Length: 133
Image 1: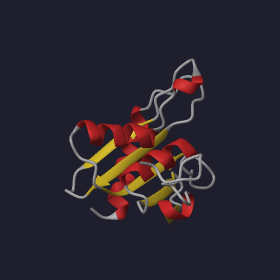
Image 2: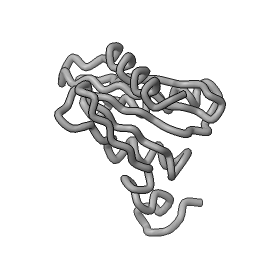
Image 3: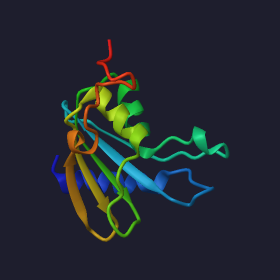
């Protein structure tokens, strides 16, 4: 799948969010090694800490479907500059692919590309500054 189509999938997922509190809709589309794409939109909760970001919705959907070999994720929001994943999402991504390719896009057509390693250095070192078991 080419980058443009993956971004389109994320844009489509953005239409299916549940964001009644912030009104901030984010869509994500995750490309797996087997060619499948899993998408997700953010799901808010009145207790904002229980909100789940679009990226994690897509990742958890893929895991629930039995795959965890991720190649690329596209993230789309209606922002001036492309939106960047939060720290929690970055850490979840690192659990499965510390060098995941990340496409950030907005509705105006701006696209930025990063590797997860650029956005989250030392992902396998925990808060005690030692590798996970």
